[in-house]
Image (cartoon, rainbow, N blue to C red):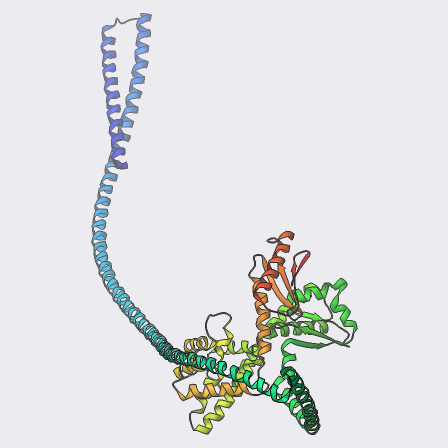
Length: 591
């Protein structure tokens, strides 16, 4: 029910109530008039009182009637106003309905337009999505096709390797079968010869016994006496011949001693290359004064222990004036320690916290030096267009050695040799120099990725967009894959020339470094170990453990386990000391 209808209902109720009151008053008034005519006239007090009471009542009724009339007039006015409001409300309702109808039509039209636009937009989006999906599908198809081609090439390469191995195995089996056949024939022949020799030995024994008896009869001596005389004669002749031989040898030695001595010394100097060995394991740092040694050691050896624990390098302070030695088989770790100690000496502030700060700075500096060394090597060989990741990997080879030979310098040398060979043969010089320069790139990842460094390097070159001729030369330079191109053959030849020249490599140094690395690996594989350093040229293993994970008893057990495993797996001269560092140090000896 609306507000106008409520207002009209209230007005109607008021009109009805006022009309009822007016009717009641009128009825009372008529009764009073009738009673006044029927009452006695005169001075009767009761009559007078009754008359006054009725007049008062009549006056009240008239007043009530007036009020009722006023109320009725007001109600009528309100009814009129209510009717006017109702009419206005009806007009407004009609206008609202008309506006609602108009808005509804407009809304329907706009809704239809929006639906049409939405349908068109949906069709456009669907078309765009279909196009994007088509492009993505094409790209994925191309990628899968490229991947399948690569896999097919890899499978083909592996099949060629397997076929080559099967061919070699078949040839080896044929050779073994032929060898077995020859051995069988030889064995039969030997058996026949042994039988014939046995018969001849029996005949010779009989003949010898007969001859001995005849000789004894003729010479009048027994066999023992004749043997003694013969031995004395032979001994005298041997002594004389030996004296003559010694005299001739001494004369010849005096004649050729100087020449042969010079030859032996020159050969040893050319092939040993002792300066390279010294640079591979020891660095010397010169100090401004001997007083600096005490500051490096620190109170009760605190600074030198902190330095060795942080860097993993053995710091040797001896009687050498104004110099200390840094010893470590890892050249990168040793170079970082050398830079850190040099900065600490120049700064003058040497304490454990400062050592850690300077060590981090020096490690970043060595990384920048590796990057610069790779860039300098590229400039030296004339290679400019190369992937940045390959430059970073080449920088790692600055401190990598192969049989004592620096790998980065070996790559530069190999590239120059290959360029000279290419110029002599009249083939493409730049491509062959690139093949030779990148042939050992896999050595930068051989400790991180399983497999031969030649195959690892080929995968790296293929990954970073190198030409297929370069990839083949890398994977074929150690004959894991048969060389099929002139670039691969010249890469092999230049690699052999660089590695085979006198003094280039020393296998003993490489074996020594591998032994130290294996020592660190053994200790690093134990639970709770934080850092491991091989010190004192591999005669001491220093193991830093996490105090929360390893207690004192566990430290003793860890030292014993490491020493036991070193005894079982490695061969080494002397003994190796295993030191586990927690808050106290527990030591075991591997004998």
